[in-house]
Image (cartoon, rainbow, N blue to C red; front, side):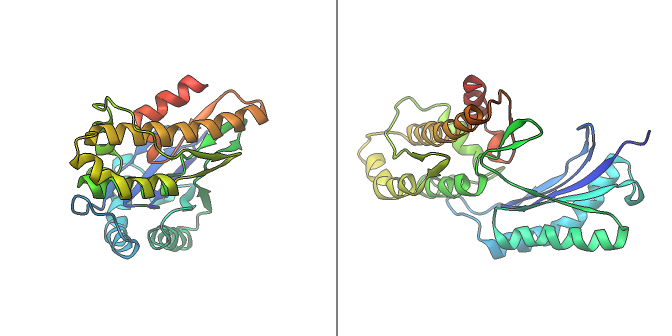
Length: 251
């Protein structure tokens, strides 16, 4: 039997990626391009969308060539519907709709998620847009680059952290709030660094442990309510090895 093949688009933040995958989960290609801003700066929706628009079609060509498939062999087109940055998300949505009309292929829209049930397991998207927004605050203070990904340099610094700093921790049922953490970082971080009360590594370590603990807690609560034992982590923040470790321990 012919294998079902999907062409997927992800462009909800500063990375635009196009992948070819079979129904059994085999990844045939996964080229991507990241919008890199100067150290300490975040990425604005308009400029990010312009970046995605510039690179999306070359990525489609690269994905098909690497996978050694043609458009005729593609069975469906998938794209991230949301949440995320509106303008970058629109780029993927428009390109997918145009290709759908040209190639006569069906479309599947996929949502990021915090924790929901899918095919008998809990799926957590680590609430990528919100976590990335929090990371912008600490990257701005510490003048960290978002190359190769927004959270990568925070993750590497966090591995060297030794002192845990108490940060606001707000979980209400299945809802989390990161506004207090962002306000704390912007209000007190520079002073703590100046007075040698902590190191940049300590701040990154504390931020990771606090934010990820909140995400793990609500995922565990969802598992308990639904009597599930498996978790599938998706999204850019899900690439963080510490988050994966904490989720595995919880499971």
